[in-house]
Image (cartoon, rainbow, N blue to C red; front, side, top):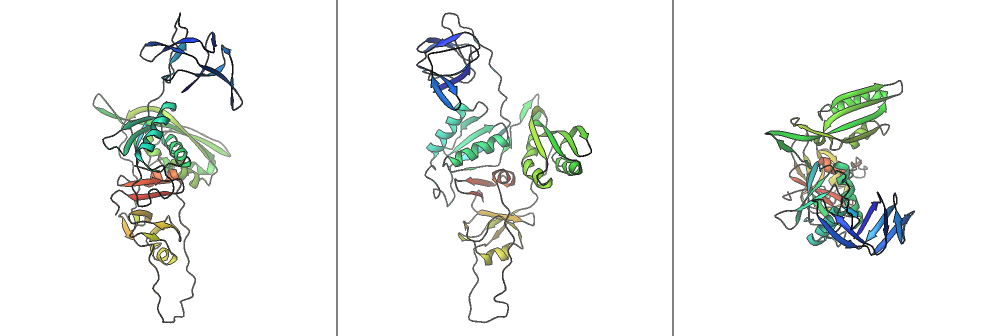
Length: 372
């Protein structure tokens, strides 16, 4: 394990004996086996470093975030920088879908466990806990972007897993339920100010400042974290990519009540198979599809959004029956609507409590927990 930090005072040498001040005022000795500095993206070995330089140390196998490396004779611990607690949680599980293992070999619970706990060692804002199930891990993160980066990094490394719907981490203080709130800043052309208000209204956003000019406007809100799921994608779609949005943690405050979620049900695949044009033509009248002809699907996989509030089993693999009867309309071209592209953030926003997101290096699939 390597320790990276900035020297606040004094000089450190290679092969030096040092003291390590822990978070609970504990003191232990250690031996520096290697000393490095950065030159661009490279680590260069050096013999000593002094005040103000950023160094890399090796030899302290149990070093932790926020601990102080100091002189053995005169140990002076530095005040650690407080790290904000996570505000959102999600369950990572081994992929149990029928397509498990088709895209990668990293599918076991051991591989998933090692990767998550290794990430927690280097990411101070990430917390990972084991659960009663050996295949499931409780992961706490700072927000939707933090979670998306972790998932995207793991899938690019070749890992395969499934995650549940994200939930905010609430607190009970003096019998009162509190939830995290964030400060949200929009910068948009003036004609989209009304659209921003419409987006933030159902999400319980409260305007705290507005500066509107001739060309552009700047609007600031305070909104609950759970109301910001999928905000970026909806905002970019509404403003046609002409605005920017920033948000950061603000405080814990009183629970703001129910926030309306998805009002439409899911279109669920009826059987395993390959999507074809005839099946899509019949299915697209029921709602908006996420799949196109040629894709492989399995029973219980979510293939679209229903136009009604309930879930609907649908067969997108249904083939057209061939007969020896001739028809004047047989050669009319089939007109198919293009499927909705569902990136990672959109999938996290879409799934309900009874649904899971399957993440593999080559695909993102949503499915029902019970497979039907």
